[in-house]
Image (cartoon, rainbow, N blue to C red; front, side):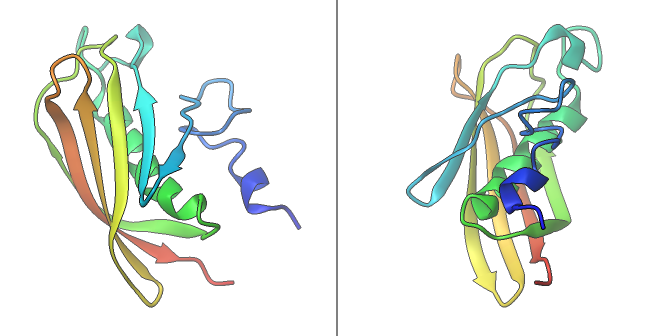
Length: 134
C-alpha cells in the first residue's frame, strides 16, 4: 500500500514529480499552513492576469495541506471563494490555510492569498473538507 506522501507526488499543485504542475511547497507554522506562489506567463486567463482557476487550486491546496501535513487524508466537499482583485502574472503571493473547526469527519477550513508587493488580499475562501474513510 502506498503512503500518504507517495499519493501526492503527482498532485497538480504540490506534486514534486508532476512536470506541468505548480510544485508549490507547504509548511506548517504553528497552526497555519503556508506557501508561496508566483504565477508565470503561462498561468494567465486574460492577457497578463492570472487565471482564477489556478488561484482557486492554490487556495484549495493550502487548506488541504493543513490536513495532509498532519497525516489526515481528506477531500474538498465544498468551497466558497471570493476574489478581491486581479492578480497580474509575475506577482509574488503568500498563501495561508487554517482550520476554523473540526467536528467528526468534517473540517471547516479558511484560506487566503495575499500579494507580497502591496499586502492586498487577492482571494479568500471557506471550505468544508471530509475526512476519507480509513
